Image (cartoon, rainbow, N blue to C red; front, side, top):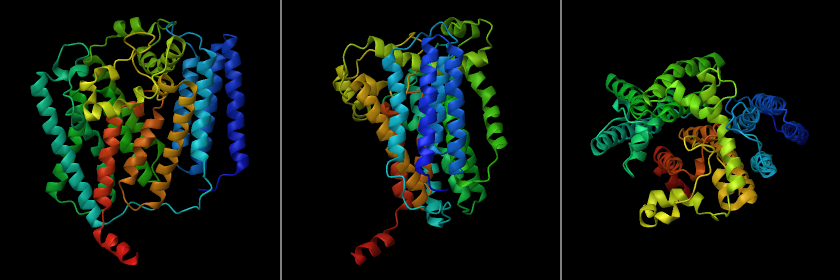
Length: 443
């Protein structure tokens, strides 16, 4: 990867600013299609430019740009009657998110180029990766069985609307859904070249089937897509020669599963069309649903900007602390804040919703800056670490940035649980007591 020049950076930000301003003016003039198309084209252009420059389809800033700028462009098309004109504060926040992330990502970027290390073929590390797969497999199966007995039903076989929302036992569900990390770890294990007997192959097959089965049984499209997407990103990172058609084949294979899970969630076409209120009423549902799952998150952000009366000064973003420590049960008032939504059924949010809720415009900019810095640290970790679990940290960041429009990732306790769990696996797989002893002798 060649070193980025100042001219490249100025060109990228210059074109973005011009396109953003043009999109804003077009929106004020109610030229919604023009407004949206300008941002979509800019997102695609920047993604291609950044991914080609990095020679990496999963380059983090490229993914974030495609998600954030492209998602905003889709929302600007205004294809639904649920959508309305945005406040100038909303536009300013969306602009500062991209600028803040870019500053954080470029900060100190002129580091010495390092050759990217291949996945380690260390037999000890491979054995530890296998133990991680076994541990997640056993924990997920046991915790799923416990939850099914405790709540008295399995969402896939229940006729209760939104049954998946009630399939939770506090503290246990984090372990249940951690099986979605298994496919990505399996990619690393197979790449390590370790010996695989019949017994190990059987465990790998059962563990990966579990990683698919549990999201399906929970009727969770997100968890299923996360597991697949995470594995694909990890595969791309350790196999530079992967072809786009391979990725496309995986995506196409997931589409029928996604549709089937939608049916099992008792979301028929009439129900969804009644919620989405598309201006063109004959719009196919397979276009309507993904469009609204992207666009309405930006609408919910605007709803909050227009209706919020006071900020919560960090309390909302501390929810993972309250949830993981159990404080939310002792002090329920810490989590009882209103959600500002276009419709009660459309509850997904952008990554920066809680940042504005807590600290306003400044909070949005600072969070974007910090996420940019964290993304760059993930890139550096993968470049200089021989620990294969570094790819798992990178892959999770890639998912969060690639779906920046979807949820308040870093206000979500599950996100932090997975990151902590991955950090523990990073230490476990990479721990070398002999190297530690050598370091102590040198000191």
